[in-house]
Image 1 (cartoon, rainbow, N blue to C red):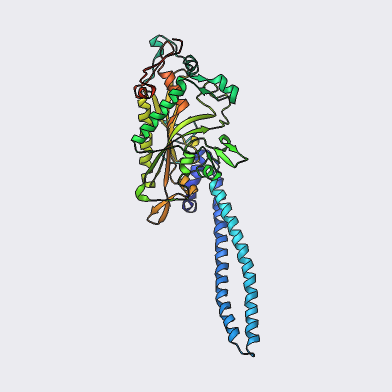
Image 2 (cartoon, rainbow, N blue to C red; image 1 turned 135 degrees about the horizontal axis):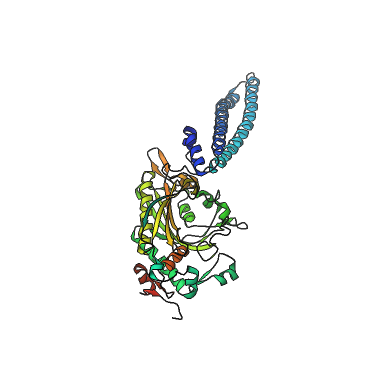
Length: 439
């Protein structure tokens, strides 16, 4: 949720952000109108409530005066009291009506403000999906032609290694599902263990969060707006399957005031992730790069807003270090404004080289969500002017299926076996080569 003070004092900043995202700037004007109506409703209620209290101060003494009045005085006092009581009853009805109007105005303002995405960082490149800026490249893609063989894609390698079974995944669950079997399953466990050890070493608390959440958690993190089409909903239970551990990790401290001295709080959550992949018809239909379900280790941080930019760089540094340990060639991009999620002010992606596609593909990302999610989830800390929203940041450490794709394709050998990066070997019983079972 955006800061209401910016809506009132600098609405053009919000309009510019909406335009940079490719979203409707008129939503800002709708929010301004809703805010004005809410303030008018609050003013009316407060005025009527003040009049009601003032009238109450007059009625109380009259009751006492009536008891003490002589028989000659009582008719006059009673008439005055009856007149005030009639006014009080009429005022009570107006107060009740004004209170209902204020509630409606509050709800209308909430709805209008929730429709606005986070304000983009002015340093983010403006444009659509292809308008990103390349920050840096790391590692050198292999020249398979110079090595004398044509690289196999991860599907063929997975079949040779008996590590990935897509046919049975489709038979049991449909398209974009799969089984990881044998060394494929072991590879997932190895990656998860490496990622959790890496995160723990760097000060993150490991968490296994729930993958089913209530609407408040999903909406609070910004996944029921532009991303709603990719969310799986269990309507009968009024719950959602999460597309990332970011959701339950962000909601972990929902409705809490965090001790400022304990910030930053850093968590690493391991969870399954579920995505409809709406709008991806025909994209990445082969293999396990874009699927409806995968497992992931996600980093999440709650911090002082003043420290958010440094924390963002820190998360990016962890992602780079993890990819370096896996000996993968990759690049880092500054994601364009039109490709940002609703909650992100700025986002960096790490894209690994996929040899058989001849291009870099996203394997990790990290987003600075500033105070946007914290306002929606009511997560605060003590500030100079009372309780203030914290900043939240997220970063993928290891999206299992995409990392497996990159590992198999980049580390393959001419006979279909796959070299194991040194950092991963302790988690695979010391194996340095993954060999097809029939070899």
